[in-house]
Length: 396
Image (cartoon, rainbow, N blue to C red):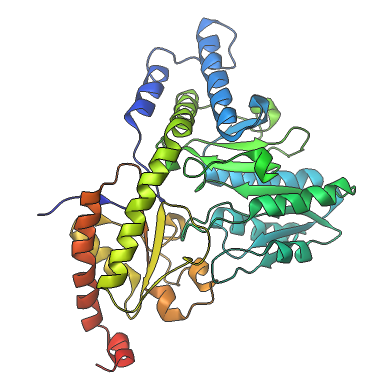
């Protein structure tokens, strides 16, 4: 029987009904501008203040260290560009990894046109960077290290806490160096504490944690200077000009509060679903590889390479049967090149091109897994039958 199954939660999540209810009043009666001093404005200001406290509690920061943005991409831009612009007198070198989201990698690349030098550290077969390699890449003129916490394509959990200790040790010796982490795929999925991570800047996004699209936040540790990238107002302690998105900020605060309460239970249940899915796929389909399985992973993501086929072919086949998956980052859709993340694992082109991301969410069920398991083996078999590359490799 045909049904709809959504397994692309790493791209975006549905808005939780409780989150929706929390934002609606600020689109109706409580519509004031939070910069206004009258009754309507102060009602909006109160909502912003509450949301700031909720987000801060979610990651263990102070409320005045939270800057509301339009989402993860803007948060990453503000963190990287803002830190570089405000501190370039201390150095022009940036260290990052080869598996970063384009919202980090492209920003770093763009800064090379403005005098920055960027060192891109490789990862191992488990998808993780070696903290020792990060340390070796740091130079006297390094001003920023930016390493994502959870990879958006294969779920690899990077050793950010270890990297944070390296940066703190260097700073204790008088070095002017800071650490940023893109936690968009981590927040709400695993516990995130800015103190434990030792980071100076941290990005998160509302629509990855059952909030609306168009809202995010950047944690900026007290004392860290960033140059605003939106000029034109004094909002957000002069770090991000523009009238605050009150309704969506309220929604983000609610989403963070819900995640804080329900995260552990959801993660445990979803991990069981993912592990069962992977176990049965391995038994039912030959010649597959689970990318990044050797290292620590988010419980929500399974990236599987089906040798001898194009991942897009399987995606389309599953979509016709009601199942939504992806071949990688939603921000890179349309690219004809294999995923830079999967290539970075040292895999061959066949594996990279046949990789599909199944990303689970808190609303997925055992019935969803049963339905997908009933479709994938046959779909892969049919695609391989039409693939000269697979037929040649298998000797068929």
